Length: 189
Image (cartoon, rainbow, N blue to C red; front, side):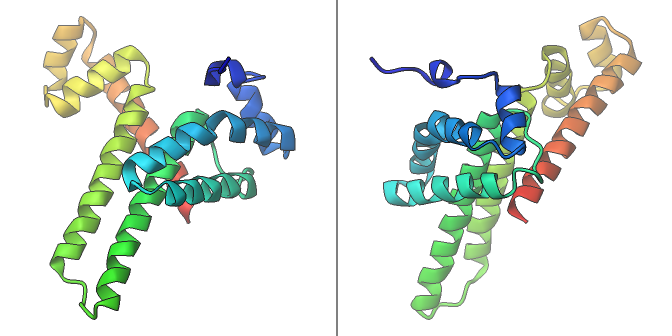
């Protein structure tokens, strides 16, 4: 009988993250076993190359272990999924540049456009992932503010809360985004 990823988790995620940071090899093995298939599937979805997806996941896992003391992780699935997507996008951009260099074609604006689109897609997916993890009220207020572009006063009326409360939730969402981008940036530096 196949076990789900929830059944594979032998200890609570917060404890697993703490143990991983403390250098517990069994915690790392647990993370590896728990997320390997899901991460390869994510890598394959974006790269359409199983071997490349496996290599990327392997590299992400090695990096996680080597940088375990330097990174701040709130949820393993979001962190690792984002790392794999980012690595795939970077690999695709490098492959495209390499093909053009081999062919003797200098990168023109279309290559930069592709890279910019890949970066924009990554940022959009990463941002969505962070926003999805926010408390419901904060997520809803952020949606009204940023996606529907409603003013604070209108959001306050819809939510039946004060304008200060709306501003608090927007600030909270922006701080979560800022902190998350800071963490992911440190992962790839």
